[in-house]
Length: 335
Image (cartoon, rainbow, N blue to C red; front, side):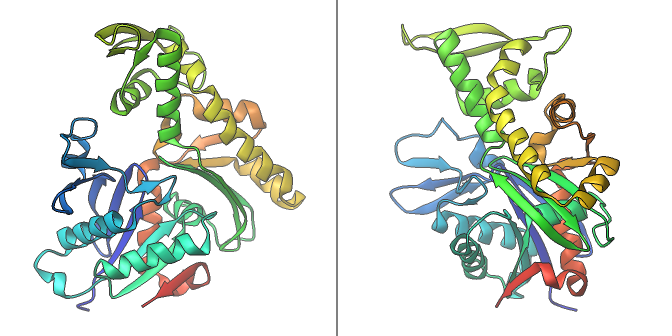
């Protein structure tokens, strides 16, 4: 009864923590600020995100997760320790059991790195669950039935799709394209078309305000400030939603191609189930305006975004953690 259980959605853009019995207790950006001289973590989460692109020479604000997997082991371990200590408070000495979700397409080496980092950060035991399965559980999809269900989880670093039946993953595919690649595509488009360099936070703001997978009518505009590539001086331009739709077309096409490749491979019985039920979308980047409309047009399968798409993965992780016996076939464990 004293052992606490934590479910962590260690995302490329945001990390969320679920405490068994309480629900979501922490939601922070996956950003860490490190002092290069002292090799010390200065800030984690929102405080560190505000430093992105604004740090002096001796401090680096980085994202330790890249494309859904660990890019910097030491910084990720420090970040996990911060999350665990913040949630546990004075009871940190009572080591919790921690479940972390990982991309279905990640390698055994990447899985081991997550397990090792979790145990080193102070966990009593570490569990791993595949992200698409966790998203399906969190989206209230009845995965235990003898019927096909398809989910597409589009996060900050990767897009993953899986067909689930009888409580297990029948087929899963992933492409390392997500919200961050969409932000980069917007920044590249602005630089090439308008000779203006903008930062990743500005690109993200533009995506959230006027970004759309299909052309918006009436067209929307937004003022954007950046650095002119020719003069090197600050400049302001007006960006239209049509510009952003053109900019994000390439990364979105890659995600559509991923969905089509899975639909081509699944057995016909499951195909008929999916046509009946449609494809469920989860993850923060699935909320891009009209993305579900574009996906429906391209695949011919009805698509809809689940309730609270950003929270689906951490909810599913928490539910799996609270019902380990039901999901033991889909979970790997290490002490």
